[in-house]
Image 1 (spheres, rainbow over the protein chains, first blue to last red):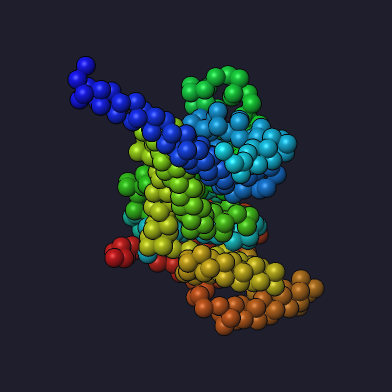
Image 2 (image 1 turned 45 degrees about the vertical axis):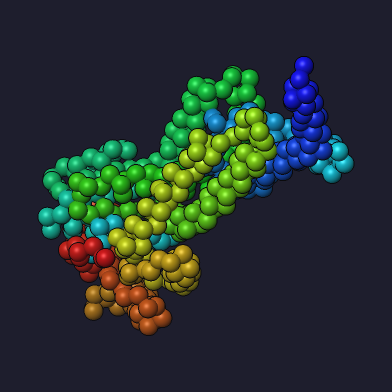
Length: 99
Length: 323
């Protein structure tokens, strides 16, 4: 094995380690956080569409209910989450958990 | 005169009579006219002695006049069925059952009738190429006003929903670092597409109502009706719509000169009070009084309708559309 080969192999190992390190430090917590914020924004969107599910009369729900065929799964999960205070607090609290 | 003419006002003031009379005038002047009734009681059938339904039907004996009766209740049910059908096409039965409650709820909200009517109005206005004039006899609730304010109000709302949805999709895309596939993508998002189509519909309605529609309010010569009309004019103005004229309907006729009996005295007194009120209406409102129509003993239908029509001083000819 030549010196160049050995240096090359070493660089590969270092690169893999560095990438793993970077992913663990930056990428992973970042995409989780961003995704959580995306989910929160989605919750707000759902609330704007279906506030009447929580007893707040909404003049648009007649129109937004048309979105349900695309939103069915999300809607069901969202409604369950929102009605269940325990899980909602836990879910919101999680966001501020330090990784 | 604009292509679309709305007659509004409280229940029982005689909107159906006035709008039928106006539609008849237009038709007899040679304009292909469609009269759209939204009154659940559907008195247009009585006025023309003929039954109508959801599809425009020609009035017997008047070749230029068509009438359609929209039933808001039925519209709401159709909408609900349509959503249920699309749901069962797309998602599993379990989920459909879970969500059914929400579908019911959305169709039982107080605004559902208006929303359904509004959708139907947009459809009628869009498909009205074959008519020269479309006359709307709008429902006797406060809903009429809300109906006309919907495009303004809903446009903003939908903007906000689109913003929220776009933002969450954007975040989902950002979260998809490296190899990860984004959970949602903007260009293929059916929700944003649907909302945008809705918004276009509302914009069409707003433009049409602003540029190609005239509004008349029908009232009776009594205090309550005057106050009500005043409020209606104000609310419409808030929504950016101007009332073009007022119709005073159900005015007490003069008694015969030599009638000195109790009936004659009663009528004379009543006529005097009403005359004062009509003068007041002419002064207090910016809008012109386009007709003062005496009340009739018999129901207004048939030949009587033509008599009433003659009392209406509302233009028939169509102005070139405003730029």
